[in-house]
Every structure is written in structure tokens, then in C-alpha cells.
Length: 252
Image 1: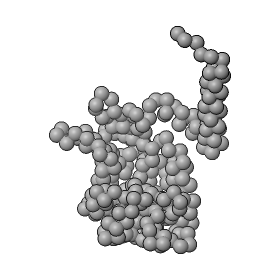
Image 2: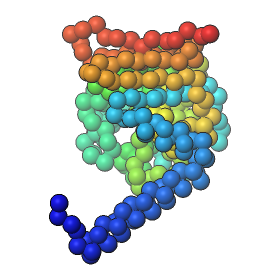
Image 3: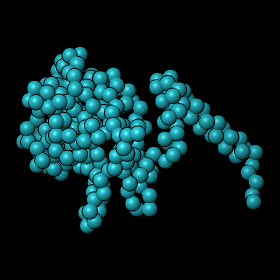
Image 4: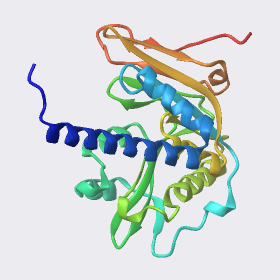
């Protein structure tokens, strides 16, 4: 085996040390912002292969409207957006709003609450009252007394203005007024920022969903807390075969 020249060994050592330093800084930021326990949990999930063969989803609920998140930032107009306006906004690639997703959502009666700034859609969230497909192979089911929130988006240049929590709170106020108990959503357990944001807004975790994909098969398990909200995830990746729904482990 050819030996490296001293200069090359020094360069490789410097690159390795720089990588280690970046990793240490990243870990330090996670610990300072989220705490040792959350940072350790994230490291464990990453080590187990989250996002590759297993997904851990934290199911949340909220029922009370927080007045602190009602008024939007100056210059933004918030409302439920009609079909024609959504079709027009979908033509703007910066909205991350695919036309086929809009057609699917509108066809099943979902609503989009968004904020418009200078004539462009800068933040939005979708709200469903019927089972909803959240990916090509997964569908969410939930109690009909609740609304499911999904596909939240805020344009990068408009973040930090509390548009996301304000939109969800105003949508919650609307749905509560027409008879729904509250709203549900899920957050990936590795997304510490979103988990912290939800806790700050008053959302609470009621259960966990585990989606395991091994050997081209999908297994889905829900913690007992999910049953109260009828919250389950269905595998719809193989339409030729009867989809496998989530199983809920009984309480002990």
C-alpha cells in the first residue's frame, strides 16, 4: 500500500479535526437549545436509523385558543384561501404548493389557511376533516370530532414573524366555532425545533406512532394514547393488497 506523503497526512489530519470541531459545535448547539435529554434522544434515534428504516412520530392535540397567537404581523392578510386563488398561487414555485396536491386536497374538502403579503402567498397550513394521505404510502385516520393539520409552510424570507402559530390558532378558532373539539397533528421525533414550537403554542403529545420498513414490508404501531383520538396510520403503498392499518397496543 502506498504511503501518504507527510504533507498529505497533515492535510488529512487537519480536515479530520475540522470535521470533529463542526460536529462538536453542532452537538453543543443542540444541547444548549434543547437540553441534554432531548439531544441524547435525538442522537439515539439517529443511531437507530430514523429516516432510513424507522420513523417515530409524535402525535399532538390542541383544543384551547391562545389569544397571544391571533393577530398576524403587520402587512399580512390571513384567511382561508379559495380554489381559484390556490391554483394561481400554485404556479409560483416559491410557494412549495404542487398543483396535484392542491387538487387532491380540495377534492376531499380540505381547507387551506394562509397569509398573503404583497399579493403572494408566504405561509399556509392545510386542514382536513376526513382521512388524509400524508405521503405516497401513508394515510392518517382520526376521530371525526377533530381536524387534522398538515403540510405547514412558511417562506424562508418570512420566518420569525409567528405566521405558522398564528395561522394554526386562527384556524383552530374557526373550527371550534363550527363544532369541532380541536386539532391534531404529528411531528417527527427528530424534529426538535418543531416539537419545541408546538409545546410553546400549547400542543400536547398524546401518543407515538412507529413506522418500521424492513424487507419491503411496512409495520405500523401506535401507542395506547392514540386510541382516544382514533389516531392511526394506514399503509397504502400496495393497492393490490389490502392495506395494513396500524395496531394499537392495549393498555396494561
